[in-house]
Length: 591
Image (cartoon, rainbow, N blue to C red):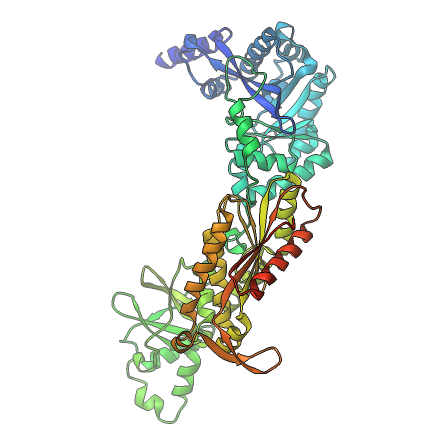
């Protein structure tokens, strides 16, 4: 009886929805002109329905088998309200596949709902929502044909999330595809989202659909959409849902757009962040020994498990205390009388007492420092993998070298493999973006003084440290939102700066690096303020300590046509800085 009363109450609620809904409208903006060209109509409940949320009403209608009926009521509400306001532009109306494929709903019912209040059907775009999985997109496409014949257009809603997919896109051939806010929110800061949206732009161009970026809340995201050539956008930044349509966006938003800088595009920091891998992916399950195990028992385990390269020795709490290398152990046991003398003794006699210990969640990229270190035991011994200090398994030096090398090779596709900073092509692309936008900026060429003698004297490991130190100095002193740091090869870097205080930043970079780089020199070289080495002709010479030189060129109207011109000018400024033995040089009047 209680269940019956609840059902009756719910049914009554849906019946009251016929007159208990009100319309809200959110603007859709054309990005090249920033004009309001359309509104999305949204049905909301009123006090007569207890202000129940629209998703709750939809779920209730679905449960009662009346989803299509309720959606028609919502469509009739927004179409009638839009027509009454006599607003220019198009109206976007949300409908699910149920409204077209439910047998109880006839095509004329749809036309009547959409034509409420005298609404012109040719001004309506139906957003196909992703509330339910469409199992037969081809059948849905056929059902849409009747409305298309009356001038109605279609949009695929929330693409990139929910049930909107490429099959639907290909079968339905929508005039518009709305990219879900999951891909749009944070677009300017995510290389992954940017790559996906760029791909969608190519698909849309091929299939003849206009794209709309949904959920725009940040200026940088909006500017990225404009730069990608996406024609339309919608979101709280441009206008929230309100009872009355609007003719223009807020003046404050326009002013902010006019004054904004061109955000530095996000970049992948190499495949380490794209495809995270840690030592847990290399762990080899192997039994652990204790001090109570004898060398005879170790021999038996190696004989039974021929694939093991080593065995770990742990204490009573399972904390590693040593590692027995299979090859070293076998060679020792093969010597005359060793089995007789040591066979019954503790396995600790032949273990390495200071094994290389690594936590299971440690990233493979962080292990690269071990590869560069002087202690190369890991190549033969491998290493012990722990979880919170307790023994978990083993890893081999071979597998570590192989995987880190693979990561390095793959990383080179994204950026410089030493610093992971973008290389020549991304630098050129970003300069071209700024030239197209015609905004003032600065290009600065960064190079080390007397780096070759340092590299020859201390070796390339220390040389790599010097270059990474320079990269760190540059990246920590720029404004990451609007300043770009590129590594174009060797010890050469290029800065593309939009910060107002760009010159102060450059001068601080010089002072900071020159101070920090002294930590890479031996004390005697610091005392004599340089090193003795060979010049490029093989002659012995005294070289000052390594410092940095920055040459800059300010780019102002009229803007040059090619990015390469600016790189040449910046390189010339850098040569002036090196010849004059000054840390910073601004090439004036050349842009």
